[in-house]
Image 1 (cartoon, rainbow over the protein chains, first blue to last red):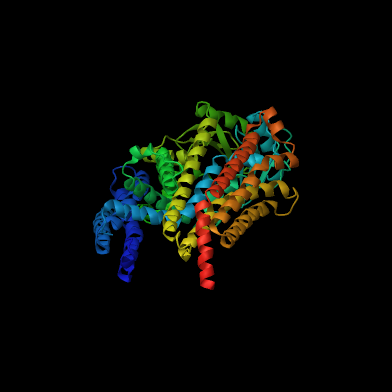
Image 2: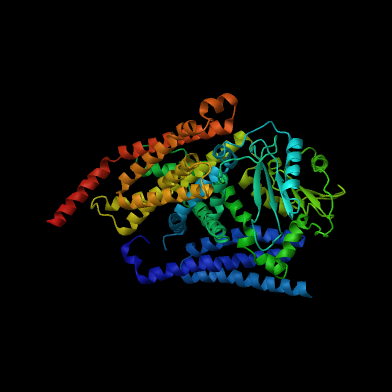
Amino acid sequence: MKSKTSLALPYRLAVTSRVLAAVVGGYLMASLAAICLALWMPTSRADAVITGMMSSFVFYLLAVLWCFACRTAWRAWFGVMLPSAAFATLAGVGLWMART
Amino acid sequence: MKEGFRQAMAWLHTWSGLIFGWLLFAIFLTGTLSYFKDEISHWMQPEVQAYPLDSARSLGVAQTYLQQVAPTAARWFINLPDDRDPALTVMWQDKLDPGRRGNFIQKTLDPVTGQDVQARESMGGEFFYRFHFQLQMPHPWGRWLSTIAAMVMFVALITGIITHKKIFKDFFTFRPRKGQRSWLDGHNAVGVLVLPFHLMITYSSLVIFMSMVMPAPILASYAGDTRAFFNDVFPATNNAPAQGQPGKLLPLLPMYEQARAQWDGGHVGRLGVNNPSDVNASVNVFRASSDNVVHEFDSIVSFSGTSGELLRTSAGQSLPAIIGGSFYGLHMGQFAGPVLRWLYFICGLAGTAMIGTGLVIWLGKRQLKHAKSGVMPFELRLVEVLNIASMSGLMIAIAAFFWANRLLPVGFAERSAWEVQTFFMAWGVSLLHAVLRRGRQGWVEQLSVGALLFVAIPLLNALTTSHHLGVSLATGDWAMAGFDLTCLASGVFLAWAAWKTQHRAAPQTRAGRARSLTLKQEAN
């Protein structure tokens, strides 16, 4: 990271990719996690929503840390999108159950 | 990024801290000042006189005034004087307009005579409070930007803790007069010393605007109907609409007393009257937020305005609402008495110092490499200019804001707006100065100007008002005296900082000499 030679274009692209994964992917994951909490918490609807919103920032933080701690930029995306997909599935089931 | 976890976290800490550091410095400093919002307003509007508190009299005065001036308004609000804020303010809104905000007319009344107080027009401490989260940007962009900055702060804090593994051992190591090492020790010490405060203040700032920045759960759970969510959370805002038949509003005092009895003697923050001239008039009595640590969004007792009948008291809060309210209440610190308030202020300053030292360290480390050549690359110079303007420049801007308050004539048109203009003009001039002057000179000159401006504020106050330190200390007007003394202390601190910066200039002048040498060589 510090040596001049590593500041080549691929390195910069990888860093940009990680930043995008952290900011955009992280927000997506945090939002989906919050939706899951809001739909699945066994409390009143308003309380579940408050809990979801309040804890979403911890998910966001974890996603950001992961994106910069992992080995490659691909892993960063993978590590953010996999839980996002899981949360999205859970949220979808929750929404479907709320409708029926 | 192969060097391992801690290095990766250090990298993240460094860069997130750098990019948002300047903004966070301003947010932290203005937020710290906001803990003394009322006291600053008191200094900036010395015409508002403090009387021994008498809520019954104040309430009567406010109701008589509003019934004369705004009988047909859609809403009234009455803010009663309290320990910190001696002003009795009334606000009214002629027409309800849910799409727009802030079309209120506001007046400050003398709680004894009931006359309009002819105070100088000024935002007072409200300016810092608003700037702290709105950043002088149009709604809602400032709130978004400040919340994004809060998220970055959260990331920087946690990565800082991870980076700094020997957190408690290192805390007892302070190596003064070691240049870069001392800055790092200082950064770590202020960071760790008030770490609980930092975590609380950062996370709570995210919670405060969570329904704006994280709306997904509301949208999903309420099928896009945000209003339904807010009606669930704040049922108190559902007051009956006007019927269109004239009615007579009863005196507000018995309702005020009944509300206080409901709260076992708790205090009233403000009263709201909806449709005061209608049969369906309703009165909402809001509990003072200084009563509890946990901020209750819904601590309201509602009455019918024409029959005086108790309509509704708020039920207790659920656990998630209490947790959210605690974050809110702890961030605002409205429950804090004088000692705790000063502690908040000191913690806020420590946070500001942590951010400032971080920015200085970033530059200092990289400058070392270029010290020999004496030529600074563009990006380092940019950081240097922004460091100077965002730190010492902001100090100058704050002092200029106070000076404008005392020097602009009381009857000046758009006076309050001009105070704010002065703040930003002074800041802009500081930026320009930082661009034109070389690093260390820029620091020393700006710190010196800031020191002069702050040290002279008690003198300025004595020359322009009759509330100088001799008077305020003798009459026990602690807010007024405290303001003057704090400005004096800030000035002394800035002078010390300027002196220190100047004094440590020796190695830099060597570099400067080297630079002039290289320039000469290039010329040759």
